[in-house]
Amino acid sequence: MGQMNAFQIYKLLPKTNCKECGEATCMAFAVALLKQAKKIEDCPPLADAKYEDNVKKLHEIFDPLGEVHKSGLTLDEDLCTGCGNCVTVCPAQISHDPKIASGVAPQEDSNDLIFRVEDGKVKILNLDICRRVTPPVMACDVCEHYCMSKAIKIIGT
View (cartoon, one colour):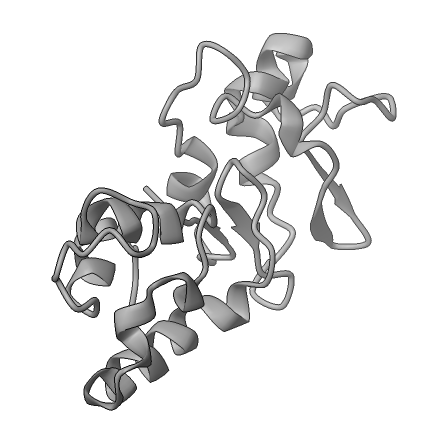
């Protein structure tokens, strides 16, 4: 499906704006689904048999994701080549250790690092310091943009 957005999810919803899910509109519910603030089952009209195909598509989208961090960042280690682009371009990491931007590996284990290459794969260490989470929150997607193997995806943008 590529980059998911609320409108793509909205197209699979009943579009009744019934508010039974607790949201004001179906579009608001689509956004809440992307942020994982709501579950597919929170929309009572989707239980109707006429939406069966749409529910199946929604589960195909969301079930493989499991629990996604509030940053929306996901990493598919099977796709990761360990190139380290995400390590060297991450603004949060560079602000902690400017040498990282020149390709120098982080020299310490630290809670101030989001990514590290270990055993030929990128490992996520601490997404809580991501610019997508820490104030002032930004719609940063630098790591996703520079991930040539498409192993990093940001869900809910």
